[in-house]
Length: 347
Length: 74
Image (cartoon, rainbow over all chains, first blue to last red; front, side):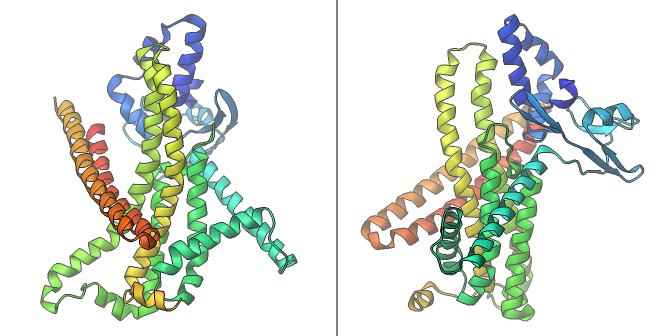
């Protein structure tokens, strides 16, 4: 059962620990025989954080549905991964990836499964919507009385984003206020997803390339959409020339078009790599105890992993901030024609 | 053999890129601190600019880390 479901090193380590406590030692070899050494790294990277069930330490909470779309077979829906294997159409490879039973080297076209990452992303969305709408209701009900409780938290977040991120980087104030909701939502959403990874049993949705790529896609749209709306399509195309004379057209335009897409790509990779790197370091530190099979390593590994955990807390805030401020900076740059002196005078 | 070479190059690549990023961020931080020391009232603005620049430098290092990962998976 755990072979089909617990496709992650977290639970493998956990099971090792549990069985070692019972029978002393010999299980580690059995386990390494199961996953060949050359496959360990791909297994670790391929399934890191992405589980097909929700667990809290060893306790199984809920199975997550598996939804697979394939060009030839169409859409198939299974309540959990066991049901998928029993149905016979798809099976799991040695690296715990979903493959076709008839042809194990072929993967289905699209895996639309609701994995743990999707669950926690939805949780972040739900928290975001619920808190912001309750606060909105509170403001509607009592518009002039002093803010209380959750209102204060959100107000400080909104004011921080407004004063530190959006207003200094966008050329005019009206536009800044128009775009403020997007930036606040972006910051809080990324922050919540980052912080979920630090809760026991939680998963970092931003530790998956798909999530960060989706977020960067919205920033690509906002950057260029705002620029086109503010300065017009003609000026936006003119920006692609980068202010260089016309005879540099053939060099500048490809470079500028590439830079158009490198910005969101860098945002994607930065957030993903920062969130993943922290987890890999924690995993390796704790993994050292099981790898060297001695408890004395724990004296070093555990305090150091607590330090890394604290560092990750900082990184969770910092990366949410950086994603937001870079989007704001790029939006300001895409609009262009703005200097800081001008802005300081208007205050 | 090929896989071993790929792992070796991944390690070297990651290490070299970390050297570059380390030099970059170190220089950046030293310059920002110096500027902040000379002109403490500008420290807040400097910090924001420094974080942005550090993020950009880090971004380049992370690209190389991704390349190293791809090599290592190969």
